[in-house]
Length: 325
Image 1: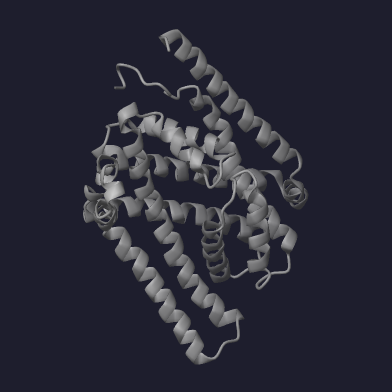
Image 2 (image 1 turned 90 degrees about the vertical axis):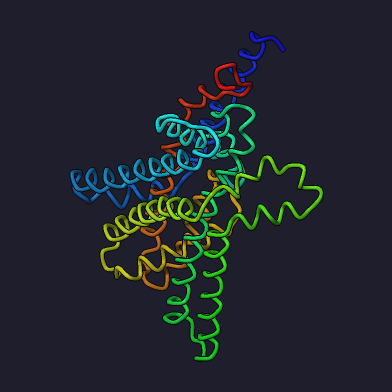
């Protein structure tokens, strides 16, 4: 294929991605009753107060994805040096592709196509290290919250509760030990003959030292605190009678359940809303407010970044060039 044909094909693919993403977003926003409920809840609140609170949540959204960009830049330090701005471009571009792909798979493509072609598969492996770090924290905090939830709301005898606690401790330790010894996965893959020939792609797993893994999970922890704060702020604001500890517990459980459910980002709002109502019904009967809070965070954290990322889609490098190679 000639260079000119590559450029034309690349432009057509990018335009199709953007059009497809905006079509999905438009139809989902038009049909989203939960966002209408959110606007209804706000109609009696002072406009300045609304601007301040929503503005703070939006700022936290940007902080969240800037932290993710910093983590992505650090993950790539063993593979290909990229600037912080390049990392931001790839993160937001990935969010656009993630909006209509199962389990956010498009996010991987959106990032690695900013790399030179020969480093893209290794980039996917490096990105998975960061995803595992985020999953570890989601599972650990979720398991701790689950213990408190069982203690408070599920009537079980003492022996069974102790068994639940021991199971949660084992669950947490398994993920922590696995993460900080992620090089074991490299060794496991090398033990199979059919995967051994691909070792040049996953050997990167053996390069991350525990000090580096600690820094990566530090980025993950900062992100977890940021998007937890978004939920905390909105629930305190719209349901002021809730206890702080209850919000933290239910939010951690919500993240745990969401991480276990396969979904599309675009349709994830329905799953989030149903899950949030089922959890928060133990501490509040204001189900509309719970759904509204969840839907608004979905809009701020998923839809707005996906729209912004559409600009960076046109910077995707599908075929590579001499400079990037």
